[in-house]
Figure 1 (tube, rainbow, N blue to C red):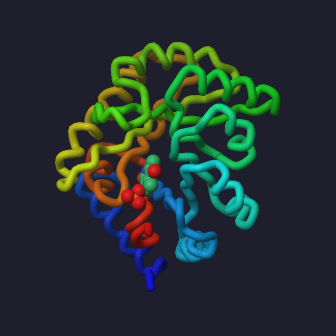
Figure 2: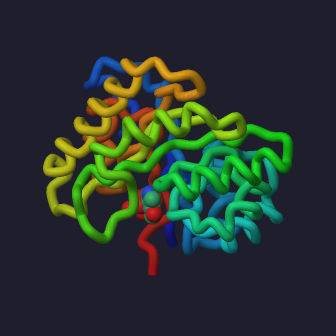
Amino acid sequence: MVDIRANVKRVKERVAEAALRAGRDPSEITIVAVSKNFPVEAIEEAIEAGITDIGENRVQEAEAKFNRIGRVVRWHMVGHLQRNKVKKALNIFDLIHSVDSVRLLEELEKRAAQRGEVVEVLVQVNTSGEETKFGLKPEEVEGFMEIAAQKEHVRVLGLMTIGPLVDDPEKARPCFAMLREIKERVEGMKLPNVEMRHLSMGMTNDFEVAIEEGADMVRIGRAIFGPRG
Ligand SMILES: *Cc1c(COP(=O)(O)O)cnc(C)c1O
């Protein structure tokens, strides 16, 4: 049996230790518990243990869980979002971490405008250069932000990246440092409607290194819910 309560406690301790090592205030860091492939009961246990933010990577799966749990937590879309799922996604998610193309940005703008809302997003960057990963290339980010700055119904609040699949988390550090540098560059552009408030980076294998490099949102699945089958 996986003890979700004990896992949440331990993850919180590890997050706090990493923050303090980096001279940061642990309360700045949001733990997004990524519950993909785990049942709604597991999410309920995590909420009882103090989790306030839930991440999912597929709209359909998130919808079923959202209908059971509702708005007692904030919902984060962390996976690749297809344009034909945007309408549904806007019913569920408080923050979309994975905006990775102008076409998706345009669809979000259109659908959010229809609802008379502003959708909050992060822009995903492929910092590892791995072909299989979604995300803008680092050199595409500034041009993308100039387009995003003109959207009335999409608000960029930061950046997201997925570290490389490596055995040693230290090997992910350059990717996280790169995302922080891109953040600083975008801040220097001083664009309207584009705020670099969040850096979403770090998962079970590498969240401590990500926090040391400036993450304020870590997306953690297995360290909370146990191994995914
Ligand atoms: C699955 C997933 C996570 C969590 O991964 P763990 O290794 O289980 O912590 C984080 N971010 C994204 C985008 C994911 O798909």
